Image (cartoon, rainbow, N blue to C red; front, side, top):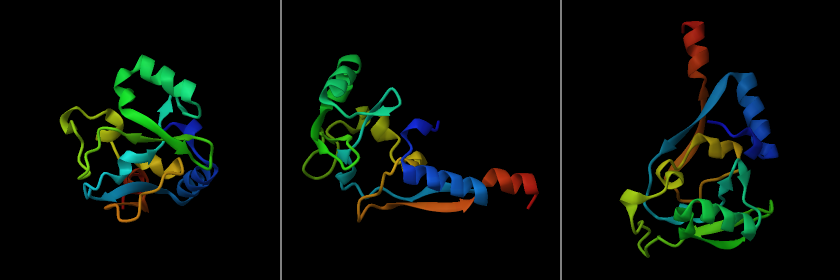
Length: 140
């Protein structure tokens, strides 16, 4: 599900460009199990990026499992950045089988529109491809 409210200005540009060109974005590649994606990530609550510690505390109160994250810093857009405290020194998750949906579903193509980027050396990449729906409609 797309959360349009989270799109960055660049993300809106990407979204409109893809729609006009009849293209989609997909994620290709594989996880290299480095654990770097577990550090410096932004979290959203209720369709909005978390900007304050108070909002993060409410998220943890409502969803205690998010207590595994700690605030690192604030990024250039004003959103808090977090690190997962369950990350082991070798880059693995302390409880991989019980990881959160945000971890289980990473990376989603929606990241492309929310100004998210893959860390250099990550095994994943975004790729713009012809829209499958458009191909089906055209019969090609």
